[in-house]
Length: 253
Ligand code: A2H
Image 1 (cartoon, rainbow, N blue to C red):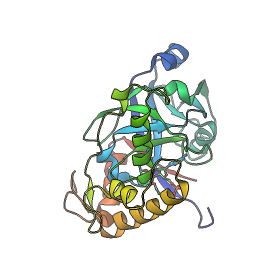
Image 2 (cartoon, rainbow, N blue to C red):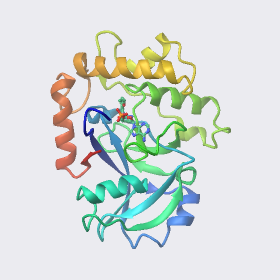
Image 3 (cartoon, helix red, strand yellow):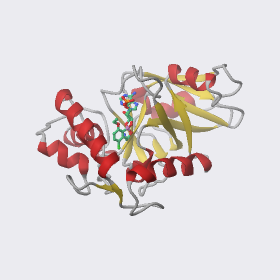
C-alpha cells in the first residue's frame, strides 16, 4: 500500500484438533512440533470477540517450521516474510513441512487467545486474499462487517459450504461499544447498509471503513483487562499484552 508498511498483529491459534482431512496429511510430518494457525489482524483489541477463524478454501497453505518446537500454518508468501523479519528461524530460511489446501483445514478446532469462547473452528471465506497478511483471518463478527456477512452466509447454507452447522454456531460477542452503533457495530452496519451477503463487495467496503473509524475514534472497551477504556488507548495495550505472553507476534508488510 502507498502509505508504507502496514503493521499487523499476528495471533497464534494453537491447533486443538485437526479436521480428519488435515490430520491425514499432517500427522507424522511435523516432528512433534506444536502447530499454530497464525492470523494477521489490524484490530488486536477485538480478539475477545473471536467466534471462529477463516481460511480461503481455494488457497494453498503450508505448515512451516518456526524452530524445533513450533510450526505455523499460513501462506508460503507470509512464511517467507516472517522468515525475513526473524519470526521464523533460521532468519531468511523457509522450511515447509507440509503443503495443504485451505479446504482441508476447514473444521479444525483451534484455540483463540483472549477470546471469551476459547475454542473455535476454522471456516471457509471465499474473499480471503492470498496477497495479504498470512491468508488466515480471525473472525470477530461483532466488529468486522466482512466476518459477520460471511458467518451469516455459512449459517444459511452449511451444506453448500461443506461445513457442520455446529462449527458456525457461536454468536457474535459484544466487545466494543460505539455511540452510533451500540455493542454490535458490524451487525448494525450490515443491516443499515442492507448487505445481503459476503458478495456485496461495494457496500461491505463502505461498512468496513465506517466500522473501523467508529471503533477506533469513538469506541470503548466492554470486556477484558482494559474494560471502560477508549479503544484508542486499549489497542496498543492489548497488543503488547498478547505479544508479552507469547500469544501474538508483530508482523509488517
Ligand atoms: B481484521 P487491510 Cl474486528 N484477506 O481483523 C482478506 N482479509 C484479510 C486478510 C486476507 N488475506 N488478512 C487479514 N484480513 C482482514 C479483525 C478485524 C479486521 C475487525 C474489523 C476490521 C478488520 C477480525 N477479522 O479489518 O487490507 C483482517 O481482519 C478491516 C480493516 O490490511 C485484518 O484485520 O487493511 C484486515 O483484513 C487487514 O486489512
